[in-house]
Image (cartoon, rainbow, N blue to C red; front, side, top):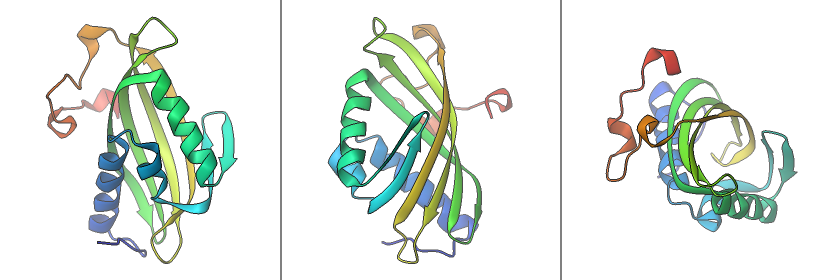
Length: 151
């Protein structure tokens, strides 16, 4: 099922959850298929575009971010744009496998066929430790109650 703009609240939510599920596969080639071949990305302080750059970025990301688990929620939408709030947890392979959580927002733009042409991400990491984890093994990320203080 292709989800195309203009988005409604329902179709925007479906699009967000579809992206969440795709990213949780941690398969760079599969994830990259959801973006236009010339898609523009900003991820924190990195700017790039195109499928090969997306795949290379995701390969490096998931090499560093072990045990990655992500949740995305719709923040806002309008016509061909969606804003997303997200939280993900990972073990940082470059920092002794310490558990961390990233809090952030994404801004997505789609063409009329429903293919993403721009993805802008801002995020901040927080060291959480094992006791601070939300997404424990075997737990569905959708089952985690995220309090207002984290929204």
